[in-house]
Amino acid sequence: MRINIETIKDDEKYDLVFHLKDFNGNAINLNGASGIKFRVQKKGETELKFEGDMVVVDGVEGEAKYTVLTGNFDEVGKYYAEIEMNFEDGQKITFDDILIKVKSDLPK
Image (cartoon, rainbow, N blue to C red; front, side, top):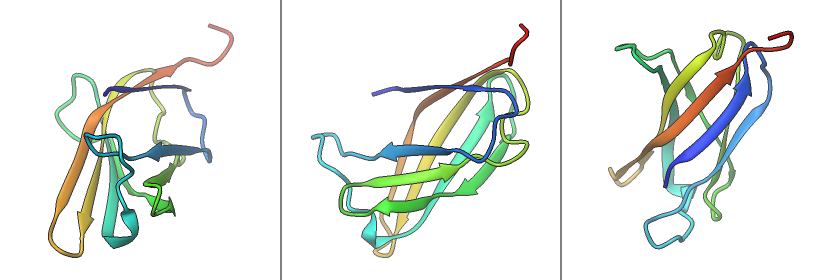
């Protein structure tokens, strides 16, 4: 299922919160995750725009967040994003159907 997010260019210090679920709609227990990464690439580019660590908000409910930092979305356009979770038992899960649209601020 695609996740669509819209934000404004140069906005920062807000959280992008995700409720991560498996194919059956059950929350993925994040308490065993050894690391959760948020990776973003601008459409048309070949390199990552940025990568950052996510924080678990509610592990049992599969809730994690990424806090947007200065410079993350400093250009208007479309971005692809993914969330990569690595678990202590070696399991790796990637959510890669995230589209972020960065719009210009007023005046347009």
